[in-house]
Length: 160
Length: 246
Image (tube, rainbow over all chains, first blue to last red; front, side, top):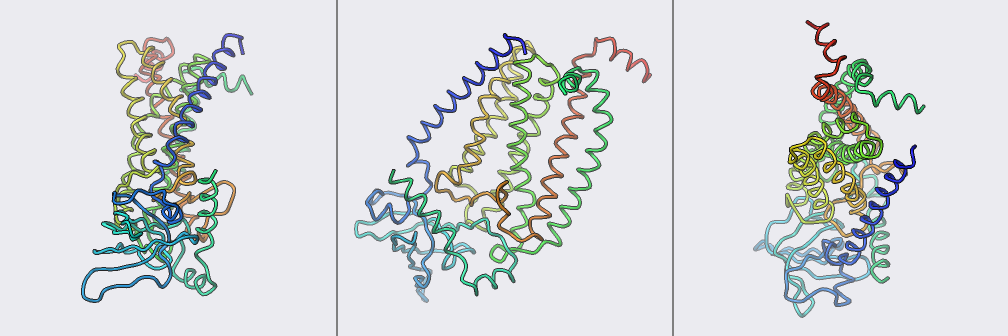
């Protein structure tokens, strides 16, 4: 490689590193805004604004779903296995909504700590499997562990 | 090793040698994509939660992989062009951009179609979806910038710079699902661990991914050959080529 080309290569790589650093710092500064939703632990700590449209996310707590048989009203709790958030919603739930499933709810946090959802979105994980396998795993007590580990890790990072 | 790479920098060598490689890649990609499509759509098991809509993964994931790989390849070709002044690299970078834009669009579109039955929405401004949309704009920007200059050399240089800087977006796409809370789930395939789904589900996916990569290589070879002819039309060897063909 001729010295001129080497210099050119170094200048380009240097510029890339600097640009990468600038983008990295910007994203780091904006990290709270890039997160799609608040976790129940953040809401419990008072990080989320009250009476403004926000998104909250977590797993639907097992055994917490109460449906009103007369209407489409439904109440449930979402959890990150540290704190819980009570959600009230009226409308059609996505097909994937069920207890133990990850969801994102869009709506307002009331002053009394309850969340009035206008919309409920279902999350799913990358653990695709055929129905028979799922049944076998369920009997063996699968599901929460993965999400729990991730929630703990993210929670730790947020405190830093 | 270096002389071997240097030879590929010569348009004539590239033109002659790629003619031999091209049919191979077309054959393999056709074979893999047909196998993967039939296998994935008809024989792979449905998902326990999503049912048959899970099968969109057999288009969505290969397209998303390819979109990012094409951008990295384009940036590397641009780097080779800017530093070593190898014209074939610039031609390759030029012909890769439209396919990259198409693949990014396919990934976004199939993701939206998948999102409606599973998430309950076709679009959400989460980090993964947004950074992928930025990738689409980067591809379109590279194509537009190249065309915006009257002189081909200025266009090539400007497009190369944008491609190299745009590479910063690639790690952001890749790690967006780990760094932030997103609606999108974490990666299906990683290099370090086994996929979190059974073999009969990921094997057809792997076949599709490999098929898409072969398609990308074959198409790039073919379009670079065309570009070589277009740019070298006044060179002796191209004239001889046409003379022979007549």
